[in-house]
View 1 (cartoon, rainbow, N blue to C red):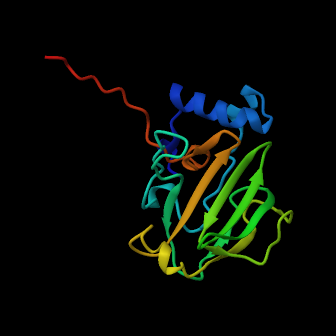
View 2: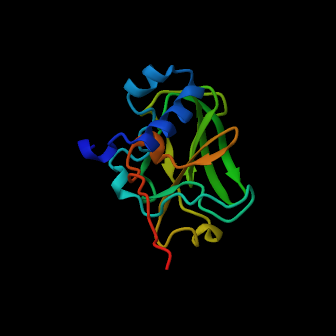
Length: 178
């Protein structure tokens, strides 16, 4: 990762503390720890993201609850964190693998086919499955094959880039009233 990719700003400091404190780290530990997630496709970096996270306006509202990464059918998908498989199977028409880590964080990837079962321990970087052929109903999600990667806590979704690095710095925008 380029050193300027993850410059600490007050906003990023608050985001890191809000996310890492539930994992069980003190504020001083949270600021010195290695970023807790890795990209689920080892050959990619945050800058390779095709579609970014878009927060919904309401709990059930429209949005994009993750990021999309360029992928090919058959690409190895690795565990972005050490934890355990909390789900492996179909959700509707999508093959999904979810890894629970920390105290209450979950990373989910789709479409991923896997032989791992719920409860299986995984280490960060372990192969958890392969990008599978998306069902025809899923092809609207990306114009080409992609891997959807989302993260959530008990209270909702957030961009995985918050734990990987790669979020753009916050910018205050001033609009003159005229």
